[in-house]
Length: 151
Image (tube, rainbow, N blue to C red):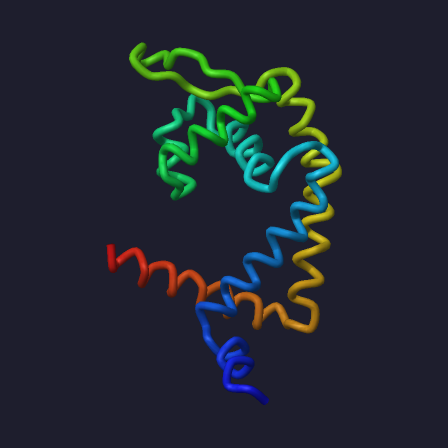
């Protein structure tokens, strides 16, 4: 076995990145029929579940840079799925809301896309026990917390 192959199969950072990339690509297949990306689907659900959310709050919650968040919002606005309205408590900023088309898309996401994603994740953890899954989540949360401490 080559040194490069051993490295690729054993480097933790690369393994996590490869799994994340594969999950994203597989998710993309489910949402592309609706002219959306997985990030856009997530944003639609997130806006619905967080009334009066501002782009700045969204950026913090999603841990994305503000320019990237704004681009994501603009793409959804162009598709008439999201709209901006002045914030009720601060007229200098605006909040995000789903349009009627956005609410229709939310129903599709919940009825069609979400079950496909759940099936995908079931396949990903096939062969894992519930205990394995819970332990894996704990490891990931601990790694995340450790990274947060480094900021």
